[in-house]
Image (cartoon, rainbow, N blue to C red; front, side, top):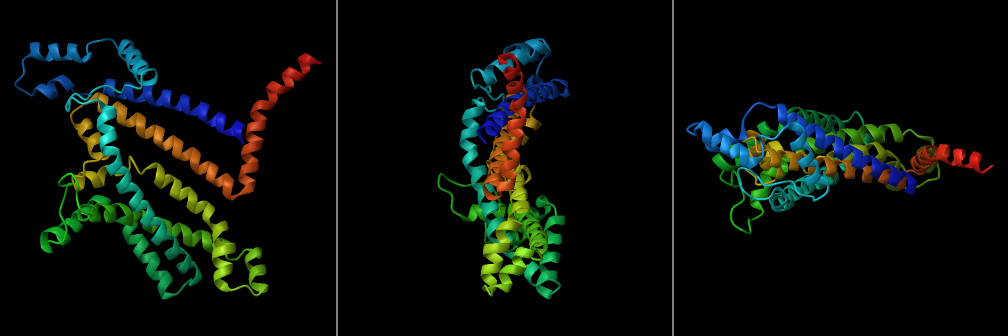
Length: 332
């Protein structure tokens, strides 16, 4: 198993290098001059060229790419924002707890509410309860997050005045600022988890081991939650892993609808202002987070299902066996 983990970590380095080269190259060809955007339309050509020289934008492609890769991988320096004038890693550290809080609370709601809804819908298949869950899931999956967020602002802020419409006020904001962003961010994931759990439970509930457990006279709750549910959770964990990998980068729309000062708003502001250090640094950190989460999800698979763990071990053994065979022939 350790061979598999080490192999994945080595591939992680290759992936991050590829991401760095790709995002740098894309920004190189994207139209728009950061210096002109920063100085505004009234700036002279001399001022623009002077600022470009200060920012290092006049250097050739390979020189800028080499400098970017060196700063990123050797010094862990993502540069300083053109707009904010603050190091990207510092601003990222300030905003990351808010985005993580928003994403993790939303995901916790998805798990606590979505999975039980899906299990109960599978148990009461073709009943009013089952049809109601399917209809609600379809509605929440179909409605765009930004539209749902705007409807919440109109209803709960403008008409009823119950919740603040946007932002986080003060150094210690109250929980009311989090209610609408969390709800708007969690409803689609909740609906997807409910549908995924229902489908997985319907496939597992007909399995022989479930029939055997019932034939032994075990209580229905024991059959469902001890025997059926653990085996039905594997495809659900896959969906949860995808949602977890998007916890940091998947809240861009919600953060901008509610002016929530997180990573998503920071990244979108950087894109609009052609703030290259912000875009490159954010994409690199988000790619690293997604790759690490994907590895952790695969390890959770192995922990839950021994068959998957055996596949990982066999995969690592095949990767190392050619070298061992060559070494054995030479020694012989």
